[in-house]
Image 1 (cartoon, rainbow, N blue to C red):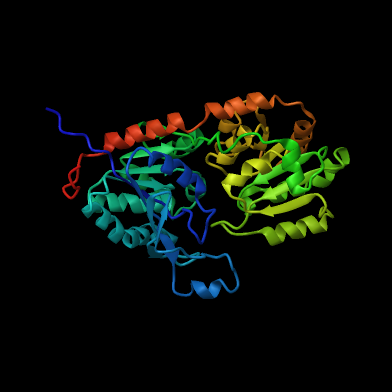
Image 2: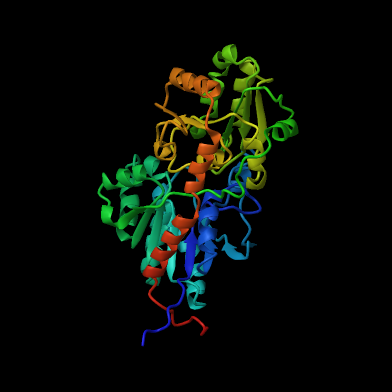
Length: 411
């Protein structure tokens, strides 16, 4: 007689995760893993970087490491935020060790309570490296999801060996894009261990809304050409690259409006620089900074636009592309990371070489002037909903589970 099959208890380990102090941090991780949590028991440990003088730094950089609560419950799921020592700009090679030490007590308690079968880390370093240590100490399998920071860390001679060691130790590796998988395989990671499981989109939350109503709520003309970008206000996302070509675009589209949705993120906040750029180009009537907006209202704002643009320098798999497509928007973006895998054909948008301002301007002009099949774009988003991806993830997690831990209560 086969023993009863217990559901795998998963602990997500990620230093980037939303909280009351940083509600926009790591939403893409929560969106993915809380859907897994609808099928399997799930908890979250989100280590928060800390050092003794960071309160003083916030006097000069108000958004620097705003901290985190010790514990929250989000959608019925327990989320802990243990602190770990991390000094800004130095000793980055120790972050993985220090994160593991900071998270150990919480994970050990969860294991004693029968709530830890698998550690599921997001980003290969430092989170994945910390998970690989914790998995060894606690004798549980470890999964790591590649999400895009690996591109930068593999260029750092101090961090690349640690990142690759984490992938070597991991039981299973997921990658949000084929490009990220090939990036680490080229550096020696085992391809058989890595499976591409892209992010999906919630096509109920993100759907086309009435265009006239959406524009009226933002004070926009029904006839204005409207571009939109969504993301953290950091250099990597490329808002400044779009702003610099707006004067050229306005010659052909005089009433052009550019909506910028986003705020500070864990990478920083360059809103002041962007506002200065806008003022220097005399674009105050063109560029609208809307600040951060919750996912629940984002579809209304996306529905007010004609074209989504993100001139980013690096992405793993940009969830926001599918969110825009689910609202019927074509996407213009740069040929980096997994962008071409999401914008996979010309009926969905245009992918241009990174750093070529003239090609970006030309692509945006063509996109604004084209009659897109928005229903077809929406159907593509529907084909990329979460269902199949979550089923695959749950299958892997359940397969990795080693059965009930000694401390798990019966039933």
